[in-house]
Image (cartoon, rainbow, N blue to C red; front, side, top):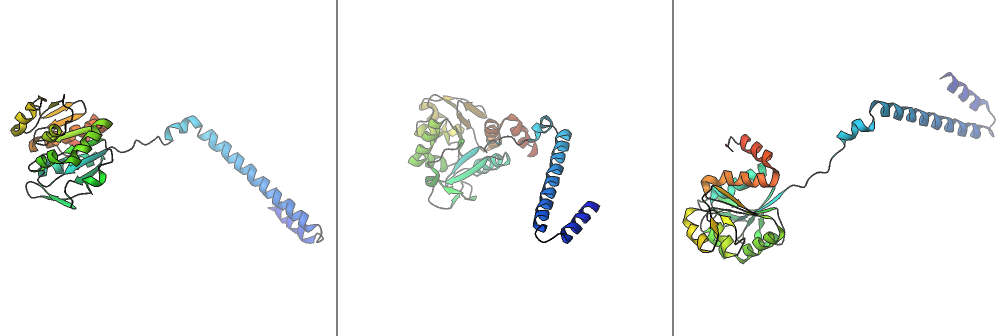
Amino acid sequence: MIVDALFVVVVWLAPSLIRPVLLICAWHRRVWSAACQLCCLQLRVHAAFPPEALSGLRPSKMRPMSSALVVASNGSEDMELVISVDVLRRANVKVTVAGLQDTDRITCARGTTIIVDEKLEDVASKIYDVVVLPGGQPGSNNFAASSVVGDVLRAHEKAGSLIAAICAAPIALKSHGIAMDATLTSYPGVRDEIQKAGYKYSEDRVVVSGKVITSRGPGTAFDFALKLVELLEGQGKSKDVAKAMLVEH
């Protein structure tokens, strides 16, 4: 402080021709002093937190969210649609509910109205990690008869995505020629139709056959959805979601 005060006095008393030179020297002196202080601070930080101690704090690459396309139709089974969407979203899967009909909402088999996120024809060119078909009637028949559903299923089969169908919806796999060598399960009422198409059949609550996942009906909807979470996000995530919902899994 005393040195700075004396320097100010000298500048003030100096002749006008010398004063700019002294001011420049003063500026350089302050810059040099600040640089020295910064270097000392960096050395102290480096000593207190060596690079190897900070390596674990560096952000890791974030894995992109898994994506699911849940196709909804007038006449889709209420529980199978809603539970599949809900459980997947609880697992932080990005779910798109796409309506088969050209409207912004569909009416399920038991009267539940669902506002869809997209129309299926508007997202038919996109590829998701899993395509989910809820059962119910006439929803399952609508899937089986739809060329757009067929195009979506074949594109995802080719891309190696998961294809999931529950209850009567596996008849759509038969209609569109998906995974003809797979083992499927379904609602009992469409068993004969599936077996006659050449599929192997199981009565397990959930069947995973390659990239195809099938399940039996409303009572197995939680098992079905949790299996999808397991395949997309891992068994630990599936167990965490089940525990939070008080579902035995």
